[in-house]
Image (cartoon, rainbow, N blue to C red; front, top):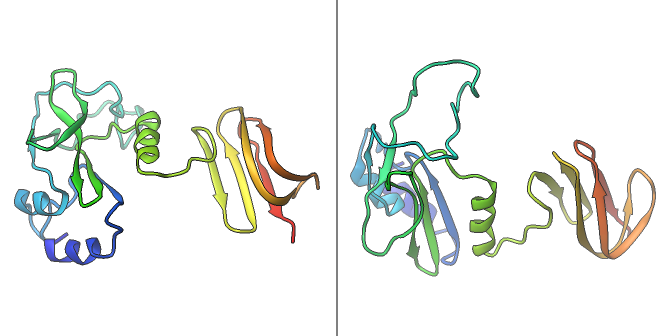
Length: 193
């Protein structure tokens, strides 16, 4: 992404927003450019082919451990600079994820495929995102419907503002309600007019 295009996008982003960049964001302008990546993301990276892999690195992002093939993307690390908050490092000390203050928000850069649910949720909460369900529970919602779709068994409290109805059972709910939902099942609620 050329710097000029990013500046048009950035002008529309709330100054207090957190922006998360992954891996090679901004590195093509249209050809390879580390200078453009720094201009877009606020971070410099460098190739570190011999660094140790982080414990959370996907075993192989394309084949999901079904094939024994060499890694087919370069290992990158973030250049340490003043003003950065280091969030994640490799076992041998290379910076993998870091943030910098931008306006009233932050730019966060993850140079490897290591962001997992606990860290991502922590970053989202720091950014002011309200997480209304536990990890690994997809939520689909608008002003009239809300559905919870957990991967694992969950039991959590949800605050229904106004009166809602379970679309399967017809049960009516309002206020704080404990929702026990079995793995790979779901609950969908509709706002009662």
